[in-house]
Image (cartoon, rainbow, N blue to C red):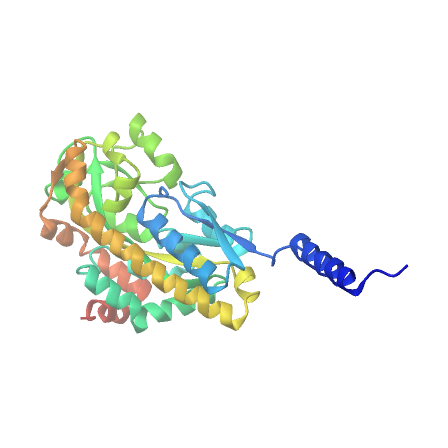
Length: 328
């Protein structure tokens, strides 16, 4: 006996709806993005905006899982993992990048940048864009310059009013030869150490102090283990949103545009957070018990580091350093 036509149509419609409900959703690729500070830091702000933008721009075909607090290792380990393709993305400072792309070390020269405006104009202009190309030539893809900020000194021994006060302090530094060469001219004893080890080292007195931007000092709660802060602003610390060449090469041209624009939007948000932390962070750190020297003798530091510029000129070219200094 045949089913009535209406019944058959209803049955077919039901089967079609059931099949649609049971069919897998469009495949979503979840990318791992890591960074060393906390989730509520400027790095976390940049990563969150980037992830939101790529999800929106690709109709959720791509999303992110964030790994803050050095969950995927220190910056050097993360850069290496991105280069090898075992990690998809990293929001990372240039501090450790010079070990992979020597040309980028030029931006780590102490007192190279006058202020945030100078640094941002340089990186967003032809000089910064040329460096991004050099990064790609070394097996990494940099989507945009984000930001870490101007670095300041903290320690547990004494207030730093001038370069002479910094002399003799055992200071944790990044594994960055340009930073270390500069800091030695201040009389500091540079002690390279991965960021994940730093809080404990300060707590135990393995090192006297460290140097980092205000947003990092805040997010890492260094006020719990450091007494003195001096706003030396001795080095501007850029950052980058890096993507694995393995992931990048698998993206369509349209998706590459989405990722690049997402990184630009994220970088702007990260810079804004740096501005906000610089504006309100000093008061918070004072409230947290730190003794802050807001106007140390910057000229004493510049005079101390001046002899090192001859070596920097040999390494990077005096003309290239002058070109950065000339950006208005």
